[in-house]
Length: 430
Image (cartoon, rainbow, N blue to C red; front, top):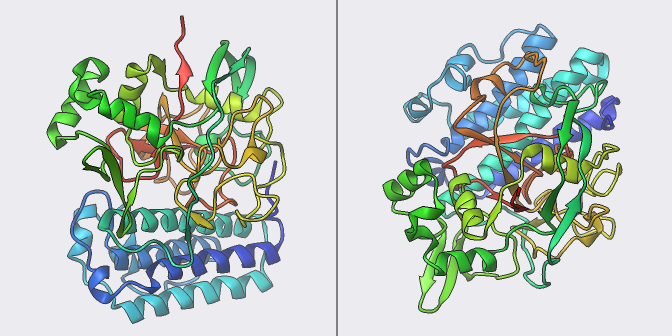
């Protein structure tokens, strides 16, 4: 199912909205906060700001519209495929005011062009620029969490009440077309195209694993018992001396967690977040469960008839507080809601929150579908195929609703726990 990207008016609104969010995510940060320490999981904030403008200029203005660069040396500064990560702290980057001016000039020129030219190619690259900036907005958000900055401007802490749905949903399986439907013009290359898979019967938990459930694993010595971990996972755990999730803090008999710049009590019924693939898999071994395969995840979310979303084909509301909202997306409520919230987004079988709240790890390595053909933005998927990258599905509270759908595939290395990742479990295959 195509999104409503066919009109210049919609694209104009999306381009403006994506940029508005980028600016909100940096507006309250001091110049000192923009000079972040060198860490492998984040970028310099000032570099990331310039990069989203460069990407928009590179693909919309220079590639699609054949215009000259606005800055002569932009590629040397902001081309993420050519500029090694650790060197980004050493670049002669423009000052904050100059970077913001570059962002404004690029967007103004992109929007001006939409008034005079709007063909299929231009529509595609404008869409790509929005998607790219939306994804970097999410990255800027977990950068703020990593560094202990305040939560994003205008967001509210999620309420933490309401028990999650209990038990498993049963799925009979059968033939299933995994991937994006042919004819959907605005999807990423790693989703293309739907291809026949045979899904065996399986059961899946109706809710994602909660903070309280994972605390039982930790309190049972889960991080000290190698029988629950893969060899690689145990090596990682030992190397970083992990004894609990990254932001958890033991306070006597209770658990606290660091939430951006605050320390708050762990919410037992809230969906778990900030665990990596190794931790998710170890929990599954402890609980005598397993992670879902990504084909099982999409089968449960889409059904044999290939719904666009777990609840049907209607897009999620962008205001998560509206009566029609079915998923925790778009920053409206910051952080993971209770695992029992958003019942309106259930699948027909009662599986809840497959979209929004927390990205969900699957058991699969990230790889191409049969017949894969690389899109023009070649660095998006192909360089990351294969181990150590695993597939995540479903989006999180900081994901934009215009980006996500059942067929959307995210991917991160197995060791990343700074991202907004959680998981749900399946029954073991006998």
